Image (cartoon, rainbow, N blue to C red):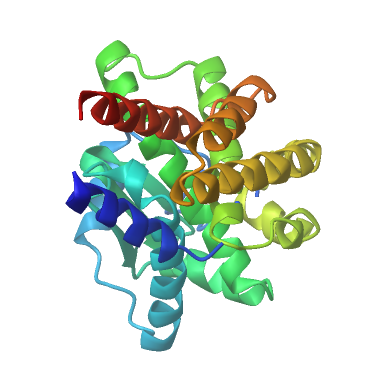
Length: 266
């Protein structure tokens, strides 16, 4: 039990104290962004075969963002995330695939770089894809509708939830969502058809999500200070005072309840 507690503490304190994120797809012929499905095996298989990003400087910068975002929620991922892979490709594409793999192309990295806010934009992309993984969307879809695929309504619901979690995750990692909201050119590049709607979603949710993130962080700190009753109340606030469902708060309530049960047994 002590080892488990130490592991959790180490994870949290390694965290650096989230775009309306998008699930990208690429059109090989047009070379432009296009929304796609997380279960599109052709895209996943194609990206898996591509070489790693050749620009080592850009790749190193991307890895730093990756580690920072992933570390901020590593206690939630467990073994769900197999890896984030940066692939050499002229097609703007980022996608969460089966078995917990995320593929992001060099074209997306270049787009983030040219925005002037590389870290914020990339954390936003990574956070969105992690949102798909932590909520098991692609597994549910594979079980529910493997033949027909998701409906338009299901896709919109999935993307909105992943957007929300993406903002939450990047804020937890210490990145600035405001730099995404005001960068309409970046949003237009990654979703030329729906970028105005994405901006609206981000503007409507960013302040509320920031507040939720701060309350969530407060709960984590209270927990490790030994003030579990206060931590429990903060996590309950996160659950009860927002329309968004953040699995993180439920996870921490479970940890607290479990530790309380162990203490009673001792």
